[in-house]
Length: 164
Image 1 (cartoon, rainbow, N blue to C red):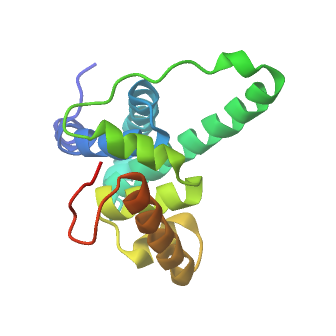
Image 2 (image 1 turned 30 degrees about the vertical axis):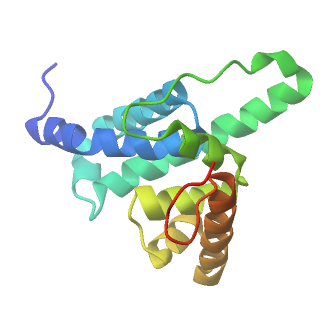
Image 3 (image 1 turned 135 degrees about the vertical axis):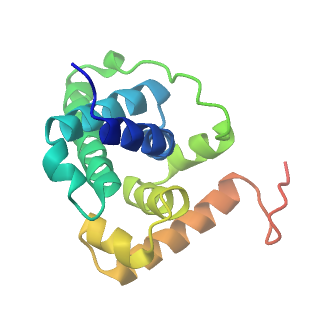
């Protein structure tokens, strides 16, 4: 089956950025690839409706994010039953600092979510609040806490200089 040219263009233009966002959110490149591919598969199956949305990339991001959260919930249930089901991380893609990914993994999920959506997805505080379903003030607080924690974890001073 031939892929609709507009879907192929949409996929090519948006995939790398969404993969980076999901990788930063989940901390595992292989998992991020699976999640993003599944989201695009669902978008393709509904392409007529998805392509007419104001923000088709946002739709795919939401699907991938929901899949990630569902996967975490399932993993948490399984991990509770068997601790040895979780494997080692796969090395990350070029261009995204492994130090940053490791630091992001240490943030509480809500803070990580806010930071990834703000800094990697370029969403505004208002857009993140709508995406997550919480007040804007909550997002501002999460971003502040995420920046503070990341600064400590990455040993960055006020001028962005790293100190090891």
